[in-house]
Length: 284
Length: 272
Image (cartoon, rainbow over all chains, first blue to last red; front, side, top):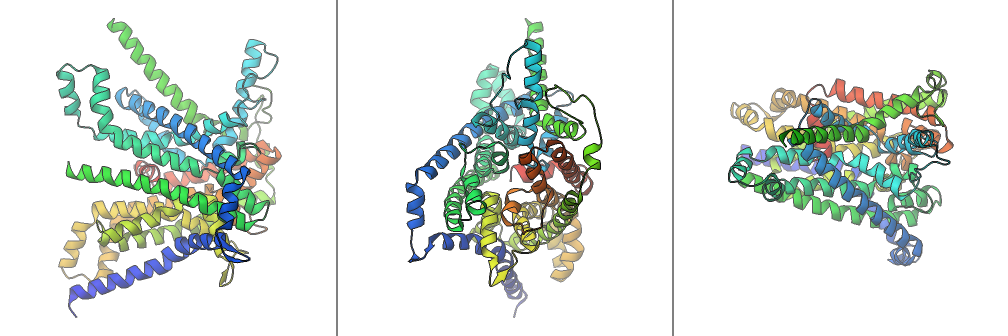
């Protein structure tokens, strides 16, 4: 046997071991089992659980709530994130590098803690409300949005904006300074340069960050557990309560399978967008 | 005119700094301040400070801290070993269709809600052929699945950047693969391995959703105790525990990942 074919054989054996020992037990077996349980009923395999889920007004409300929260939060996080990244990049100041590092440390901050800290500040007894009441001699707390749509979106925006800032900053750094200079020397105004030169070149990074942020907000659980209420239940929260409160594993598995399909679809879009981006970078 | 322009730019800089601090520094500050506050209700800032909440940790809290630490240590080690193995195994498939597919599948646990992953693992391992739902092993398993994508990414990025030339050189000099791995690849990957351990530790110790789905009776981690305290209204105790959690994960990022790796850690965690 030649050395090359021996290497190829060893590679094949190793790859099979990886699939068998890592992909199987950690990813494929559990997630595959989820689908199996969701379609297994007393009368055999059936899609009844899904029909029941999609015809239940409660679950439709859950889907509506999930969509509203993710659309609002991802939109605001994208706008704030792109604005902050542009300002930090084009108007750097002493300490701005430290602010970026501060943002990076957010990966070590559990999301439910962000929601929790908001209670101290914006709760009806919180600092900001007390300050406003004392300063303006108000009779009641003026800010009351925490345990509702507004509070949830606010917490999601705080936690996930860095996920837009980072890739946008990276994209801005990669822009060839000479192209911007050329546009400027040809008489283009800063606004025109921003719109016609910088934005198109940074767009792949911005879109990638925005989609990833959308995916993570869609999947978010901790923030909802702290700030959500009976009226505001998203799909992950509903899966959790079906499994742990109602102890209805079949319903939980069905919802989890629906969630899985939704998340994986966004994930596939993300992969498409980022892979297309790296390919065009490689060519250029 | 020019003066007004400079002023406007200074104002914009100030605004940027203020917004960043307000959004990204205040949460951490609130945890610190409330953990040491003797009382923080109906006042703008706490009237006085105390160590009471740290002194009053009971057996449950201490147990949770030890458990969190042990589980996170195991998850960081296991996740990094598996991530490294995946990265080395998939490296030759770079640019091939199969490589792309396997790469995507590895990232799946991090692309689905942690409760979905938790439920799937619970359903898969709470009945024969393998029932580990009564032990901490199921928590380690689900958290390892959760951090593996990051460990893999960290090692794969380093492999792609730094290794090919050295490996080719060593192999062409007749070094057997095992020796190339031990003497060339692993030493070169050390920074990536440290970063992977640090990030996995931080993610594991902060995980709520997946752990909440699978944890066996009598077991709890710091995030679980914190969330129970929050639900019962024991805010200061929750803050004190949360501060310890944050200190542990920050320490792992700063001490284990080391200076200069933080940007890399953030890039892998936030951009991928």
